[in-house]
Image (cartoon, rainbow, N blue to C red):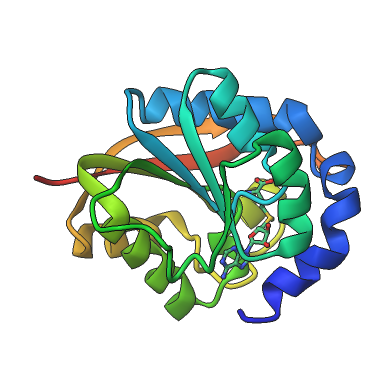
Length: 196
Ligand SMILES: C[S@@+](CC[C@H](N)C(=O)[O-])C[C@H]1O[C@@H](n2cnc3c(N)ncnc32)[C@H](O)[C@@H]1O
């Protein structure tokens, strides 16, 4: 996992134009906003160039983007000045229960299972009681390919979240395209609420 952010440093300058840019981000943000409505801090973990974060802010959300790649964050800072932090998703510089929403968009599928579990545990730590985690799942399946790591398998993520005391609270699909793929069924998104 530790060389993953540096790979995104290299991809940062072409990331938006190749991954659907602001159109995809707006579609993802609308789904996050629908699945996790309400006031309070929304932390977009592994928020990359900040396109999703900026679209969420345009919907009126209070957004903080966290990402480990300095290259990706250079773009995020431009979109969300003062609302960006460089951080490992496994060790967020946030207090327990400080966030109303944590979003994980297109992160878990990249990770080994143990790292994905650590990210989910850290997201749960920073969520307030009643707060909501929203994450993409089954990304590679939406692209018609086999899973890379299996870490974002929907059933697996649901089981890990249940073990962390999170309760499934909604699901959705995001339609869009990147330079390489157009999703037919859509990218799957799941939401989990932290108990009291
Ligand atoms: C596929 S991109 C998704 C970016 C953004 N969420 C989006 O939808 O455009 C994956 C992101 O995860 C970030 N990342 C990878 N490992 C990370 C880690 N350990 N902690 C924080 N961010 C990480 C990368 O730097 C990159 O920005």
